[in-house]
Structures are given as C-alpha cells and as structure tokens.
Length: 432
Image (cartoon, rainbow, N blue to C red; front, side):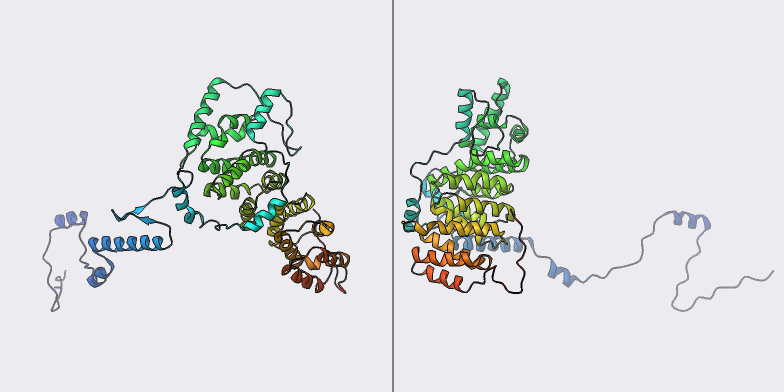
C-alpha cells in the first residue's frame, strides 16, 4: 500500500483548514452567501433620481404655466384675491346670464360658435309656414290617450307602433316619481337601475311620461339618449327622438340662442340610429315649416361632422327635395351634397326637379338657395342629362344672383353630361 500523495499548494493560494465530516454535512444544509459584489454606477442613479422638493417645484411651475395658457385662451379665470383658478359651471348648472356667457369658450371646443346673419334670418322667415301646427310632445300624446281612450295614436309616421297604456301599480308609480326627482338634478355618475330598464318595458312611453322629460337636466337627456339609442328598435327610437329629444333641442335653442353641450352630444349619439334620426328629428323639423336658421345650422353641423350611410342620406335628400320649400331645406341639401356621395340617378333627378320648381316663383330666393344650386352643379354636373342641363341654364335667367349665378353657369357650360359620354359606359348606380 503506497503512501498518500501530498497536494501541492501553489503560491498565492491559501491552504484551506481541515474540517470534520460532520461539520461539512451541516454546512451543506445551510445557504451560503455568494461572494459577488455588483458594481453600480452612482453617477447614473444621481442623474435619474430627482429630489422630492425639486419635483414639487417642477410640478408647481408646470401647473402655473398651464393655468396661464388656459387664461390666454379664455378657458379659465383666476381669482385676484387667492390666485387660484375659478371653476365655472355649464349652462345646465347656472341661472344667470353672466355664468352662461362664461361657458361659451368651453362649448366652442366641440362645435363652432355660430354667428347668424340677420339678412339670412329674415330671408328664411319669409319662407316659413305662417299657419304651422304646433309640434306634439310625449305629454300631449299621453294626455290625449288618457282622456279620449283611443286605441291608436295618429303620429307623423303611420308605421310607428301604437302606444301601450295600462294600469300601474301605485308602488311602481311612486318609484318612477323618485326617478323623476333624480333626473331633474342629475349631473354625472350612475343612473337609477329602474330607469335603465325602461326601454325593455311594453308601456315605456307611459313610464317615461311619469319621469317628466321636459324637466330633465341636460346631462340626464344625454344619458337617456344613449340608453334609448342602444336598446330601442328603429321605430321606437324614432318616437323617442321626435317626442322627447327634438322638443327639448328646440326649447333650449329658443331660450339660450345656443345649444347646451350635453344636448349637442345627445344629437350626435342619436345618429347611432340613422333612420330614427332622419324620421324623428330632421324630417319633422323641416315639415313643421318653422325651422329657424340657428336650428338648421346647429343640427346640420351634427350631420356634417358624422358619417351617415348613403342609403339613409339618399332617402333624406329625396324627401327634402320633394317637400314644400323653406330656407332651411337649402342648408341641409348643401350639407348632404358636400359629403360627396355617389348618389343614385333617381336622387340627382329629384334634385334637378327641386330647383326647376322655382322657374315661375315670383319671390326673391335667399342666397342659401343659390349656394345649394352651386354646390349641386359642382358635385354632380356629370350626373345630369343634357336636357336637364339646358333646363337649368334657362332657370338661371329667371332666378339669378350677381356673384353666384355666373359660377353656376360656368360649371354647367363645362359639364360633360351622362348621356353624351362617348366610348364610356354609363356607370351603374344603385337605386334607393
């Protein structure tokens, strides 16, 4: 048996002490710290971290700069005594004219501040219906239903569902009277669950009447429009727009000469059901014969800024072109024409006949009519026939404007009519 070899230890290495076997086993059961030391660059940490006091000063200066920018734009006013910004409430919160005027800048962020020309307004009033019937509201129809015990209600649209009237449990009536009190003072937050289920009820109009819609706040009207536009069918949404939303819009414009922001948003939300919007708001407004220039411009801005399917727009254009003329008709026709739809020939023919009706009209037509005609020939001069072109040129001799008519004549003279295109097939258009 040979001798055990000695392990040579090189210079620079330390000879480890001998450890008993039992001690080695115990050491293996415990966790030993690793001899790794991470070297951190303290300079980078100092650059990334900012002292808390310095952070407060930076945020304070940024907040002050933001307030100064908003003051320059007229969005916020600062109190001279405290130096803090003054918060102004919207029109639905205020009762004085001063507070209402302070909100004009906030609303102008969402739609343009509309300046009404007095001459245009007088011109439109000349074409308004003098013996127009008052617009019916939900309260009028409910009272008529309760007093006369009718089985069907005559509405502006015969296809609308008849109203369901039934005896209500006193507890249900008391509950929705409480909902009425909430909606009168509603500003933000959640709505009562009892109100959210109204669109699912068979007698939803009767329940809605208990909540007294004319007294809802503007914010409540917006939330209600969201609920009803999402949960009602087209015909039911049309009735809500016509009997509840439209009267409120007109009352608000007549009272304040401008539209509350929440009601403007409600109009935009109503376009979620485009057929209901056209049949419940736009067409009844024009058929009433009392649409003012302000109402036409504001509601028209909603149509101009939002996408509408071509079929709904084509049907609306054709209906407007065929109804009795008022100055507001030209505003809406021009807005629809500026959307540059590929209109069916049936619609373009209807527009041509609409303008040709005024060949023998002795009245002096407003500038809005001439602007609508100019927009039509600019957009659709290649979609009219040669006979229609000649008829429109004859129309310009009877109805003319010193600056607009030369432009219309120039467009028509350079028009390439649809029946004179050589070597090119007439494009197929869908028919409404």
